[in-house]
Length: 437
Image (cartoon, rainbow, N blue to C red; front, side, top):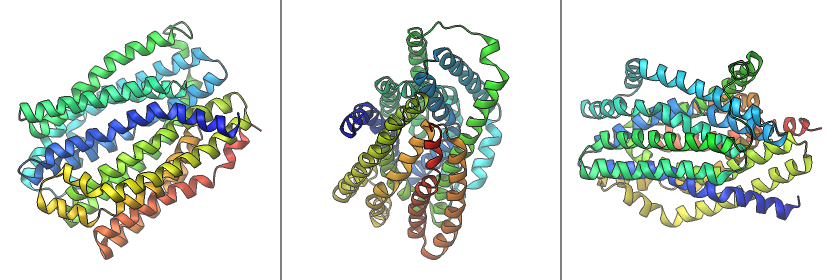
């Protein structure tokens, strides 16, 4: 595949992911807008911290998507479709166990989460209301990880994008309905997520098995699904990604925690800015997601030329888009902030630090692309090690800079963190090429 054809292929696969990923952060932006325009900042602060906690919980199980992509893509490249079916059943079994444990131990999780943050009585009340509803979205949200990972691995990104788009749009509509028309405040945005994730799971899990029948027969072969060697391999890959994802989400909740030590208003303002950062991240992830499937396929089919082209051209596309997003935020950041809150103190505080949403998109685009490459290659040990190094340095920087420079120090540390993630993975890049030599 020529460079031009490679770029066209990446863009073709990325376009549906781009539109679906664009909707994901809009859920957070709409929720922030709904809470940020109520009469008390405690609603926004409680929702901000609660969503950070659930991000830590659910993103820690991101291996259900990331581990699925690499293994499915490589099996697809070598036409092993029965392995793909077994993998889906294995991951569904994981989700059932994980969801039950989260619901059973929810009181302990809540107590631990609440003990981390110094919240006012009013904010704690809203935090509890959100938590007790959102915990029941566990099964649906984790199953969605599996479905999207499967179709990205099969390079059918339009389907994975429809799944994500349906979940996000239905979430937005239901949140608007429950908050504006039923006056359910934080309970409304939590309930919207629970119902939308459940609907998405019922519809698209049924569709998934219908589609898999086109490749191979669907049989629940317990011996193959729970084959010890396969389970050990999957567990090893998933454990690496679990550690990597838990550290990644910890870095953001640590950012929120240090912001909370300054003031609750800082947490609210930073949440607004982080929503814009996450918007750029999900847009840039479109290239990373499409790259995952192609990298996995190239390794499964032993095609070094395809691998080289997709790595090079995906970085060109990602860097160009990152720069473009930074320019858009430079022009429109104040307008975006004004949409999310009408509270004068929070709005002015957000304006004070808004230049970070201009700087970070370009800095972060490289680490997102490296993530996609290593996930597609199932080089999860390297992802884990790189994240351990990056988070360790980030924590030291954040503690020191937050103490000396306040909130600006937090944002400097976050920028350093994004840069470190790219540098540490670049160190391991040759290991991917060796897989097909």
